[in-house]
Length: 163
Image 1 (cartoon, rainbow, N blue to C red):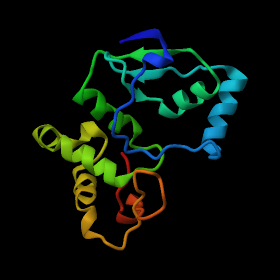
Image 2: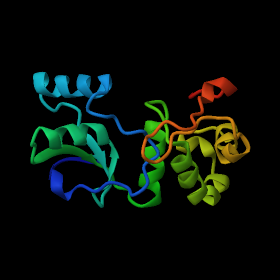
Image 3: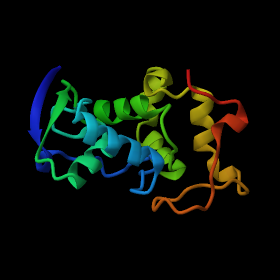
């Protein structure tokens, strides 16, 4: 692990993002932006060795809006599957999820999760089982990939909470 200054244009984002993007009008987005304007960029992004953003997409979006060219990043010695799974774990307790995208990601790594322990993703097995069975709940509201309100599931309704 090392801290590096990286050109923003060199950073990559995963093609499938299960977190809901913060819009420019969102209070959290505005709070992050206000903090950056007042204090500067003090919370480095976390990136993989192949420059994929593991943690900090909202901050990156704001930095682009503020015309930053370079950003400090914590560069980890991981890439590929490990980077994407760490991203799930780090983001588990923050924000809302696009459950259909989350289901696709969990499905993609289903064998790896079963071979080890689902806790390394930040999700317990009962949470994963519920997400994988989302299609069996036709009355739930789930947010689609465009963040449009459709169906949404609050995992707390099922007594499923982060550790």
